[in-house]
Image 1: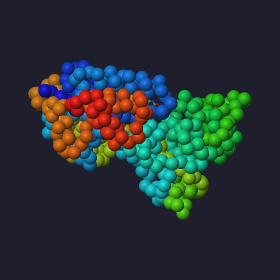
Image 2: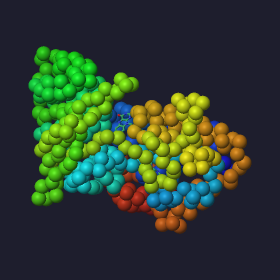
Image 3: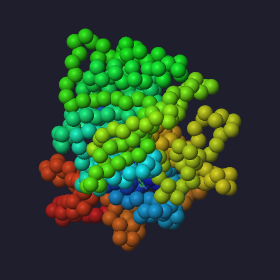
Image 4: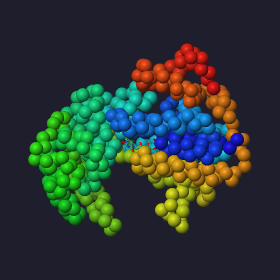
Amino acid sequence: MKGVFVVGAGPAGMFAARQIALAGFDAFLFNRDIKPGGLAEYGIYPLKDKMKTGLRKQFAKIMEMPNVHYIGNVQVGAAYDIPIAELEAMRPAAILFALGAQGTKSLGLPGEELKGVYSAKEFVYAYNRLPPFASMDYSTGRRIAIIGVGNVAIDIARWLLEDSPERQTEEVIIVARRGPLEVKFDKKEIEHVDRYISREQLVQELERVRERCERAGQDVSPEKVIAEHFRHLSDPKFESVPPRLSFRFLSSPTAVFGDENGRISSMEVAENNLVLRDDGSTAAKASGETARIDVDTLIFAIGDTHDAGIGLPMGRDGYATRPNPDAPQEPSFEVWDPAASRVFPGRFVAGWARRASTGLVGIARHDGELGANQAIEFVKNAPDSGTMEEAEIRERLEAKGLRPVNKADLALLARAEAIKGSFADNDSMLRTIAEEREATGVPST
Ligand SMILES: Cc1cc2nc3c(=O)[nH]c(=O)nc-3n(C[C@H](O)[C@H](O)[C@H](O)COP(=O)(O)OP(=O)(O)OC[C@H]3O[C@@H](n4cnc5c(N)ncnc54)[C@H](O)[C@@H]3O)c2cc1C
């Protein structure tokens, strides 16, 4: 058999598996989490029901394809359950890595390890109930700073202002390295939370940074910025409601300070100037002045990076892929060994693993499909590799003490969750699957 292993069952991996199965090959999805979906399940805002339900339906259809196999609860990588060499020993005809951007960017600030300081990804995983984050402490306080001005920062602000069960938020402060013209969030996302913005505070903040932005040739007059990015606030009838959502521009965190209980109590930010580069873009440059902001929670929403624990060569914004000097804009999906200046034959990478934290689900899907097409072309021209059958793979993993989850297990879990609600930890899920198997007589393979 010529089977293609796809590592990661987020949107990129799922749609890659579909493509591979449609081409007539067997696709084996290896996934760290028990359930498939990746950030589509565990990242996208919990109340975006329509989108999440639609994606779940599409994933369910992919799972119904007889030549798509699912091996969940198994983490691939040199630092994890199965190093790549052990996957290779199962004789795949090709491997496509679609495992997302699982590394966390750190600014390396003094005090970053204090309680109440979180990475956005883990915080989002927790409120979307991904084990083990769902049962860990991501408690928030009254004044929360979020570093970053993209859609993820706005999702988190929305959670804290509206939906968090903790219900004690008084103020969320979005801290941006650069100015108001460099915000990255989409209009429709800010509109979920713009009623919490005080027009007066926003105008004050725009006036505070106005001169520094003007020196870089930018017009950040309140009328212009409000019309461009905070449309509802220009309505004369606009009135904000508590809690408060505020912005602090031209500020980079430099240190975090704690209280006697080891929890963050304040942070220091460097005041930045805006510098205009030759290509017209802007950069933040510390002015030498600093300020202290009292906060009891700090969340970094500055994007993620690719995981160094896998054993794939690291590139700048994702795993290294073959450079294409003839057409640098044409994406390459082939894993590249920079030390030997050659590709690893039959090894491909797609989605956020190829370009960390880049694009929405549609982009990840498209990337997965393009990566799969390259893998399919490779496999068509390769000899039969004699890929192991799913049952043999499962036996091998169980012999290592792992507890892989297959499509039948997912169906049993879904049945139980429909009655009992979703589980916050892997042990409860695995126990429930075992109990359901026992009760229904569904065999494990
Ligand atoms: C907070 C947040 C909100 C978002 N909201 C939206 C939105 O509203 N709309 C939208 O269109 N897009 C949204 N996105 C973007 C969207 O989620 C991504 O574009 C997409 O999920 C990326 O797909 P992927 O398959 O490359 O990676 P992921 O979705 O991250 O999937 C990676 C998969 O790989 C698995 N994996 C990881 N490591 C391993 C390993 N070592 N071994 C085996 N498996 C592994 C994971 O379990 C996961 O299933 C959001 C992203 C974030 C972070």
